Image 1: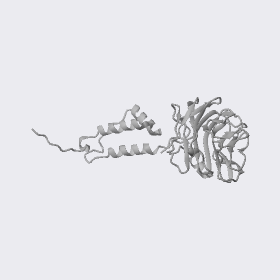
Image 2 (image 1 turned 90 degrees about the vertical axis):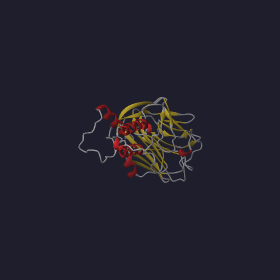
Image 3 (image 1 turned 90 degrees about the horizontal axis):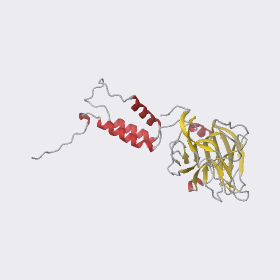
Image 4 (image 1 turned 180 degrees about the horizontal axis):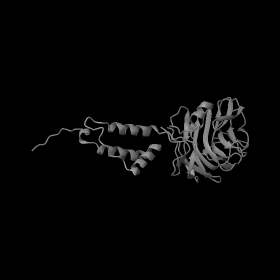
Length: 309
């Protein structure tokens, strides 16, 4: 069940000065070899090595990590430090990433080749055969900035649907769900930050790893994003439970008119059906209780008891 494309959603906006999301150092981020980085980006200004998602460390003497970056020429960089090679900053053609437009960007590495994708299409390939990715020195993983101990390159624009995989996704897989949100339990997914909470300073990781990020300075904005919101397993379970708790009974009259919710109530239910996450648990709990309270007497369970005089 899906919401319409190009829907108005909350996204995280970065000012290009000192905003970023800090994810820290976690074991899940030290991906052994095969990797995929994905994000939806709305770039408002280009600057070389600006970070979309990155734990790159590069002082010229010490190099490590991976990152999906901007190249400063309206293109994208895939930065990768493998075990036996110098760090690679692999880019696509200039002027391919249009400013003030939403674009899906992705980078993959399978141990043999580095690949870049723009809006689901492979736009550049580079050979880079190696046995793994180098994380020495280990750096914090950041969303919206490149930062090591001597340089910082913050992102200016909006970000949504940031994803980190421990597999090299193929083109058909990238295209299959680039326009829709994920559940969070997809095979190979190790980090998933939709960046659509719309409040607080926490960017929630929707995978079971729960590596939530701390938002530093970035603000929530509403934006028309080309992403279909898929109803979560939790919400579908609640809806099915409500249906099971209110089945037609033998004493009910199918032609009997039923009470309809007010327009305001219908709008609220519609809004909740189109939202995602556990934040609506309280709403659905109250709704189920209300439905149960409205059951007719024949629908309610009969309890036998005794009265003593």
